Image 1 (cartoon, rainbow, N blue to C red):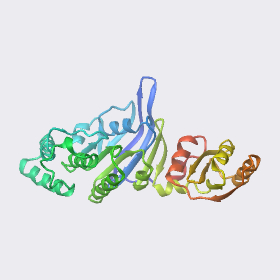
Image 2: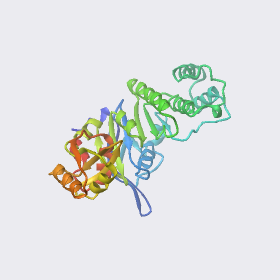
Image 3: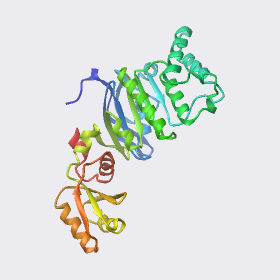
Image 4: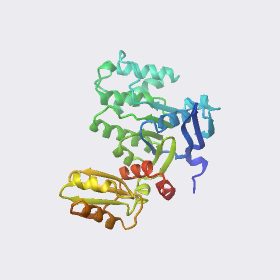
Length: 320
């Protein structure tokens, strides 16, 4: 059952965007609960950024209905802008201004009164660990520090909803972990976050996740729901010669993917019907011996199934 409108930060129905003959987003339905971290996962060109731009009111849909924070979009986009924040993968602040000057400029853009702005900047400087770098030029910060500054700038006006478009694509793993801790702090305080990413470990962190492929919503649910929908369809193959075994299994009917993880092969099937027997037959025919065991699905399996197995029963159907 769908949550009531009062519990949703974003509700979109039939969301479509065409650029000439290209359908970039194709009749997408979204329901994003308030105070959650909602992930957008998909390959490049899948329509993630186009969808976010429509939800922000920056791009007019070709068709469909959007309601964000109770406002009709794009009709009420101007009223929405004061209530949302936006952060992209590119560092968009002024590199020739200091950390504090960047925050002061953004506070002025948001029309935050000067006294309140000073208090807010002081709080962000402490929260985002810039106490000893307030006078440092933004252009001289490390990648992780720039990312933290951009996030501080995006939330300076305490938005109810924050859009993040692949915000961690240019930083190291430790900085990514720290960044995600900051996101959960925001969610705990009541902010709704919509985060697009192509990192599976980040997708696993989200409360709920949507997968887009060629503009189509192919999966939607919590990570646990989406992986549970693939029960029985993932196998681990332990072979003495994994590369040869991989070639033998890749052409077996019903096999969506065979990926080598260390010395083990991870096999994803489009269905669970006599799978082990079919794989063993293919391995014997190739002169390969191997042990086959059942494996628990992960989000990479969900992603492959959703984007390659479009004719198979989709995880979205099982998870909704």
